[in-house]
Length: 115
Image (cartoon, rainbow, N blue to C red; front, side):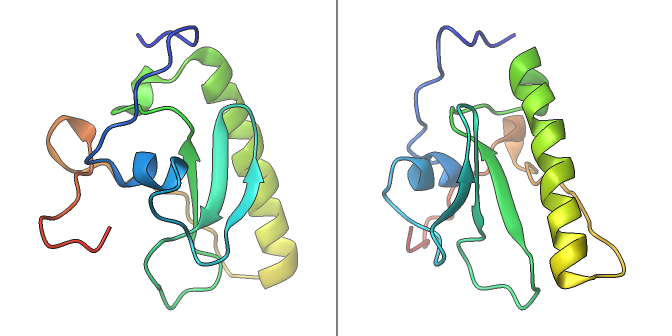
């Protein structure tokens, strides 16, 4: 398991790491940030109000690699953000999903990516 005392180095081919390091940025900038997490708009335009990205500040390849502290913070932040979305956007549903479908749980950049 990953250790919170030894943060994982940013991965060059990781979209989240590139955004966290300032190489790319979301159109609306950072919405909220804690010691472990950053919430911002999705990098690519998506025609859905409220499509946000909550990502760890350190590179992890699997959700199971989160420390207990990171996992606990994720739950609290997710609850607060979805409550705010319910109040402001009044959607019929709010979905929380994890996109890590590539080999080893990483999402490498496509070779033709502008990022």
